[in-house]
Length: 354
Ligand code: KG4
Ligand code: ZN
Image (cartoon, rainbow, N blue to C red):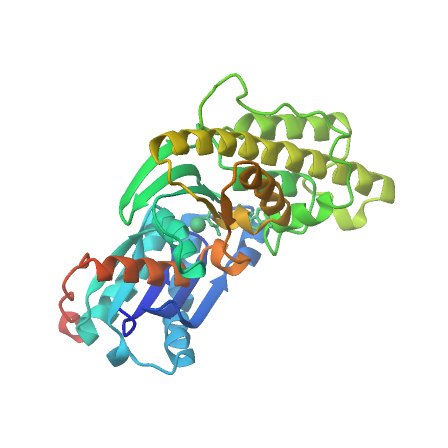
């Protein structure tokens, strides 16, 4: 497996990403082209627009990933690409590109599940991380607690019944008038440093349900109401033009939101650890991955939870938590080693269709 070299492509949401990774976990190159500026201008991912943005840069991103690794298609062992879940128009851009490369160079093709990639990248970061382990996957679209028993063998312990935590971060950041060109979550995390996290009393979601599911829609509503009742006028009132008093008021909301949003994660993880220990007594690790896992406050709070339970935390570095090509390439490697791949697609020559 050391000699494997896999190209990974990711276009499921708003980032166009590609990377080349070896079988022993060496990252030879990694390129991410972000649409964050588009997002901040239009207030969300519009599938058609996102698809066009992917189409515009995909060739360049993949070529750059190959160039930076000093390799060509000939040197690859396989091509891996995210096939879902995600926006189908966007996924198609990546899949078409992956198939054309695999076809041209006669390479095995590996379709990858986006959430499995967020999970398994932890085994690239921590090379001796063994199954079974617990994983909390937190991003803009997903909020999952899973027990990973083996590659391709996952038990879902909990999911969100409405919104994911990243969606709540993004909306709150927008409502507080933050500059979200680098992402709403990060902007909110920064502002929260200036606030008092006990100043606004938000209710912790779903306490009456003794399970591992999540809910963030109610917290979002509570935030909206808090903003309106304080007249910290929002949306079109950027934080940069706020008075220092108003800035503090927004920071208080940010900090209080973050405290409760993460408390909900802490409570669910505590229960999931108890459940997982029943199912798999040998469990030793909680993996936390997905875009929101790049948040320092999230990391430090979950660190307390695992310490209390005598297990350890594996949280990939921020650039491997948010969407990236490395996690896709690495998941491709994990599958390839087990013989889980498709034969090379037929070589596609656009001239044939002219
Ligand atoms: O995994 P990801 O890159 O894309 C999806 O699969 O959704 O996650 C993106 C999400 C966004 O909601 C973004 O605001 C959030 O991750 N995020 C953060 C931080 N960095 C990214 N949320 C909180 N704090 C951060 N530092
Ligand atoms: Zn993701």
